[in-house]
Image (cartoon, rainbow, N blue to C red; front, side, top):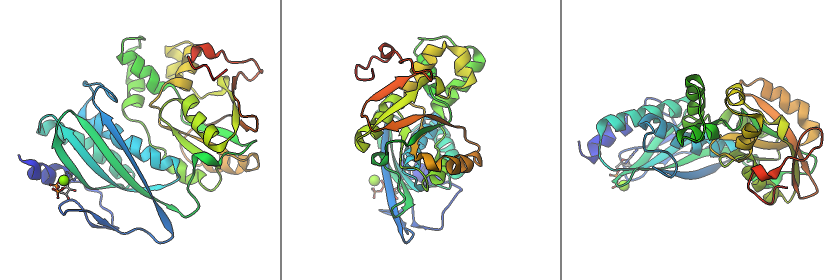
Length: 320
Ligand code: ADP
Ligand code: MG
């Protein structure tokens, strides 16, 4: 098959279509209509073999994750996802691989009513670049810069699972078969928290998605909002599987410093606590308050009894 046949037979075969797409795959550019009174949210992420995933990762998982990390960026802005483009660089035109890639890609895309509207196909070392587009009503977007002293800090889901899976793949920790199944799924198929983004955008002051570990990503909020934080490390949400797989200290370290969780971290003014928790309880997603924003610009990691968390685990001098 040549490039055009591959596009026609695989990439143009998505079943879920949107009625705001006027022209999609097949012309020189896609044409879409943007709803009135909404801003476009646009984000791009590239995943490169050996850097972002191991060569042994399945085509299904590579596609799923590439799309998920982009949708996660829209989620953290409080945006509704709409369209994506896909620039794919492949070493060979392996049809079985492409078929599995499209299966993973469209499974997640259809789940979120996201349409693939164009892209590019080139030959070279395996790399996937996705640009995702979504909408957010004017003034409703969640920024990293909006956190205020006394805000409560929340995270979705559980943290550290993907980090543990990566350590397993690098032969640094051992896992039972059941632990492998659960944790590898968390690494390869992260859940973009789009529904949560829409739920919190009426209440939250700031949000970010956790791609590099809570400590690093919350630091971005702190810097851009010009505030500090206290995070209670014994309040971090850990999955049962992770707690059984490693010691509590190691689990906390993964939660704080390992990447690839793609959960959301957001801050909420304390007077909206009940309101936001009520709304979040209606979703199936776990959420946990892990600390609060402070006027004092330090990032304080401690236990609930006030004891300091020993930053030596982190290898980061500035988290003391
Ligand atoms: P051009 O040379 O004009 O850039 P291409 O031959 O690259 O056109 O692509 C033809 C059409 O197929 C375009 O509409 C483009 O958006 C779409 N397309 C190319 N590669 C992909 C892909 N991997 N996924 C989805 N659409 C694609
Ligand atoms: Mg092109």
